[in-house]
Amino acid sequence: MAGAVVVKELLREMHTWMAGYMKSFYTEDEEVQQGIRVKEEHTGYVTANMVALAKHLGLSEHDTALAEIMGLFHDVGRFHQYTLYRTFNDAHSEDHAELGVKVIGELPCFHKLSEEDYEAVCFAIRHHNKKILPADTGGRLLVFGKMLRDADKLDIYRVLNPYLSKENEDKMPNFVQGKGHPEISPDFIEDFVSGKQADFYRIRTLGDRKIVRLMWAYDVNFAWTMARIQERGYLDQIIRHLPMDANVEKGVARLKDYVAQKLRQEDRVEM
Ligand SMILES: [Fe+2]
Image (cartoon, rainbow, N blue to C red; front, side, top):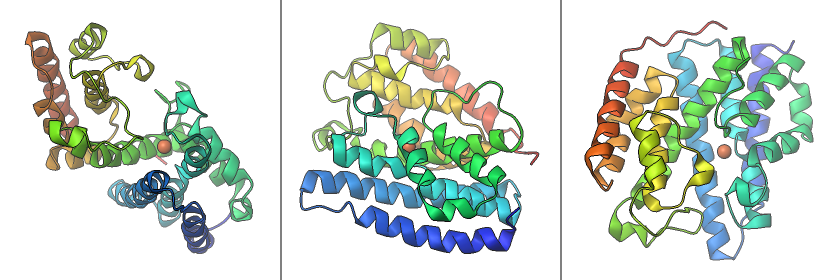
């Protein structure tokens, strides 16, 4: 099995490769370039989130390096996807996580990882965008899978929250879908009140999109992540921009209870 030093050296090679890969998609087409830059920045933040989370959880140097690799490559499939289909919508193109696993499979530096580590990286990337992790997941795969989903969500709030206000809504780039009607569809309100995850594929309005993003909070795994979400005010910003009625208020109260409970959780993992 590759030791910590080996993986750390691989990291340098991987950072260099990824930086060059992302630059190779730069284009004169302003709209495409904007999408590519957003994903390049997102990659940097998610990588940093993974390292911070790994340190918080007390992972070994080796596992922290693996977490960094997962963050760095989690959206590697996005670049090909956006250039080819001009969308980040998986439903309208291809599953970008599967695309990413394919890209990784062809990279020589990944063959230097032990089989176990390679499997963990592919697992975390493959499942970072799915509605839930497979029910039978356990051990290291479960820890890494949860970490990457948290690190990714935390940064998606940073990317999307600036477009919440009415005046910025119009500045929404094409890769942010959900322009249009501000109201929330009745089925989404129902899901929100019952604390259930709403189905991404049923989104019809801008209000639906906000509800889906709020409900991600129910899928945050670590108190560490929730604390970052709270201190940056991401959920409160979305709540302020919701069309309110008695049911939406009920959903908000339920969510706030859940967040408070999550913040009290002690993050402990077995690797
Ligand atoms: Fe992704």
